[in-house]
Length: 323
Image (cartoon, rainbow, N blue to C red; front, side):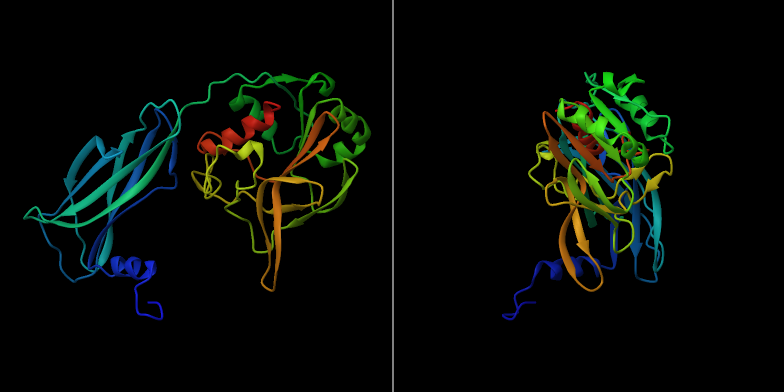
């Protein structure tokens, strides 16, 4: 409540949480590609020490109020506990552009009265089948195998000689340091040099001084695309939050280092905050324009992220397409 005893938004959220019986939906993913199978968990939480019978769970997938699919099942209501009801399965609709849908679920009693309902927001993306016109130099020193992963899933043309490449992807910073002058000359001529997972420390890159440091409060699950950069103009505020890891099968953090450099433009930003004070913003991915080309530093963990996180594909496609 505020000073005039008007309820704030948290009041209504807390009131909803105090209901004796609620239905909830959860998934590790909210973004899907068209044609993918969407599995969303349905749960019922029931506080009273009773086990009412005859309850049913009904659900429907909606687009702008129009019902795309619906279904129902018997509900098991536990006494003073929560209970998994199963997965709501649906195939992500075919779309030509990013489209928002709502999955609505409601719990009904034996008399057909609605006890509670909830809405789960879902975004569906078209498959990006665009063939990149860039070439990517994969280096033998790539211990993380991210280059192989990108080549497989981004349909890149692979070359062994970085002089033939439009985009040179380097996952071993020592290799960059060994060939720094040559690589920066390539950037000045119009090529893009991507430095993936630059180690912690103070470095000279592109004639500028940068500092890479560990994140202060553990590894991060989020970054902000609201930087005004051309690569993120079509992305939404929470597109880089709680990414699903395809190999692990669950959400994993994707950022444990940040970049500080006055002459570098953030592509994705994050905070530089510790338990004592706030040092402002830092970059998770940053760009330095150099001659006709540029150098990009990427600290995001991208391996096993593209197939399940469309925003990851959109961003990396911008980087690899030499836009």
